[in-house]
Each structure stands twice: as structure tokens, then as C-alpha cells.
Image (cartoon, rainbow, N blue to C red; front, side, top):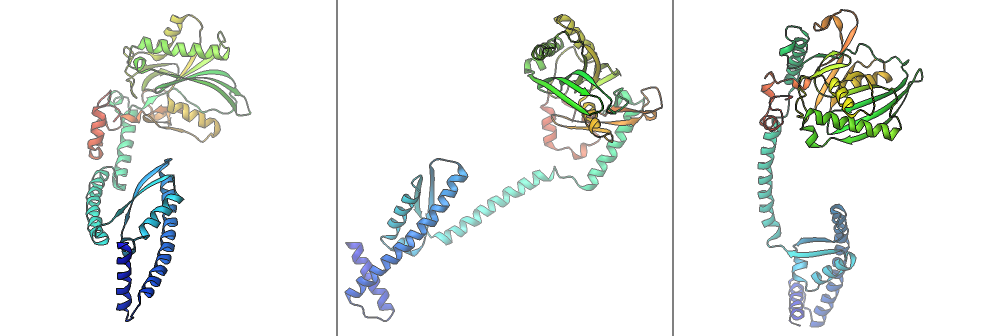
Length: 398
């Protein structure tokens, strides 16, 4: 009743300010009209607000939204029925939203100060973020410099007298040609280069460029990756045995290609000594050893089957050969994964470590070692240093 009387008094004041002399009946009538109009306003605001609330609920993907609506304005503050109507209609339209209406104190003016404070904070944060990100931005001049340095490292590694010292290893692969479409037969393939190990059966039909593949993926537990070499290769052979059983191929005389995605010094297409582990592997008694021989010895220890290991292949080479089967113009293989590496077809006359000047040979660059000699220290950041220092092989594959 008190609010009702206060409302009548306010209405009279407004009418008097307009130069009128209202009776009590006039004031009651005007107040009634105002109430109807304000209810309509509250209903419309509630409907529009309900649309926003459902949007927020969808964005947050929650069954029940809990949020606060900051409110200001004379109608909401002064009219006794307006807030009640607004709240009630919102509850009816969006029953799955729990909404708190919070009356703003000096809304727009205090809010302007708040906006300024937040903007200042965000601006300071943005400057800090930009300062960090600036370390990772490379100019065209820096990229051209990297290009020149990589070119110099490639040429350095191809020289016989430099080869042992090169950080970009430039390893001959003894792969001297690309597929020409006449290849045919059934072949086994192994792929070791990360936490998963794949065994594949590959069927190639001559002339039709038709290749069918069947594969099974096996996990390499961390304990095996960082255990002994014998344990690692015994695990590999166990995976091969499981695959042969799965495919019904035990005892089949199949030639095998071994994709081994780690730097190896190859002496021929089927012989290669591991130079050093990368990508989280640290198995002992492997570095300097012929990995093909280690695989053969593990197969002998199991004494269940025999395989003709024909080729040791880096994953870059495998990528190039796969794509070369589709497109004879392919002469580069690039890996961008757990590590990065590239191979390409080089003229034999430029490969001083291998005899012969005729034709081409695929070179596994092992370019992950680029910069290990300090040649790109000017673009390395503190974060690069932290990642390197926390790795299994600090100072390598930078």
C-alpha cells in the first residue's frame, strides 16, 4: 500500500510538472496505463533476454545455465512491478536457466571506469604476449639466411672429408631408382619410428599401379623404448609373429622391407648401423650396431619363422617411393611429425662417400640435426633451449 501511494504521488508530480492539475482519479488512470505499458516492456525485454540466455546455454553446452544479469535504468529501479514482471516471464520462458538479477551501482559511469581498468589490464597482457610471440616471428631476411645455411650444411655433409663431422648427416640410402609401374608381388613391411609399430602386407599388381595393404598397429611401451636393444627387437619380432598368425602367413617366404626412422649409416640396401636414437627412444646396446642384423638375430631367437630382409629404409625414403609410384616426378620425401626429416635424389657425382659417378642416389639428409653445431643460434629462443635441455638427448636434433 505504501508503494502504491508513493507511486500515485510520483505520478501527480510528473503531471503537475507538465502544467496539469490532476485529480486523484486522473493520477490512478495514468498510473494504470503506465503499468500496462511497463508490463508490455517487461514482457518484451524478458523474451529478448530469454533468447540470449538460450544462446549462452548452447555455447556452454550445459543442461542448466547459471548466470547473472547486471541491470540499470530508471524504469527498472522506480516502477514497483517492472522487476517482478521481468523476472517472472524470464523464469517461464527459460526454466532451465537460473538467473540472478544484480542492480548496478552508478551503472554507466562506474562501468566506464571498469572498462578502462580491464582495457588497461588486457593491453598490458597483450604487450607481454606480443613480446613473447615476437621471438617466433622470422623475417624474410632471416628465412633467406636459414636457406643459405641449410644449403651450406647439405654440401658440407656430401664431402667425404667432412662427412663424419657433419650435423646434417647426408646419408646415402643405396636407393638408386623410383618405381616404374612394373613392380609386382607380395611383400612384408615393418614401420618403426614412434610409439607405435606397424606390420604390413603389401600386394602389388604389375602394370595396373594397384596396391593393396593390410596392416596391424602395435604399441611400443615406454619400458621397451628405453630398455635394452634385445628387448626392443624381441618385442618387434613378437609383433611380426602376431601379424603373421593373424594373416595366416607363417612360413610364407616373403621378402621384407624395414622402415627404420632413425639415422643410420648404411653400407648397402640391407645393412645400416644406428648412429643415434631420436624421438624418445633410448634402447641400450644399439648405437653403432647393424639394425638389420639385430632383427635377424631376434628372429633366430624366436625360431618360429624366417624372413628375407631385403631393404632397410628411412621413413622419408618410404614416403618418396610411395608417392613416386603415383607420380614419377616425385624426387623428395618430407616428414613433418614427431620429428622432421627430408630425403631427395642426388646426382651420384656429388656423393663422395659412394663410388661411381653415373645416375642418382637417394640421400637421407637427417636435417633434424640442423643447428646442432650452433649455426642458427641467432634465431633460437629461450623456449627452444628449455625444450632441448628437457629432452632425452640434449644438444641433438635441435
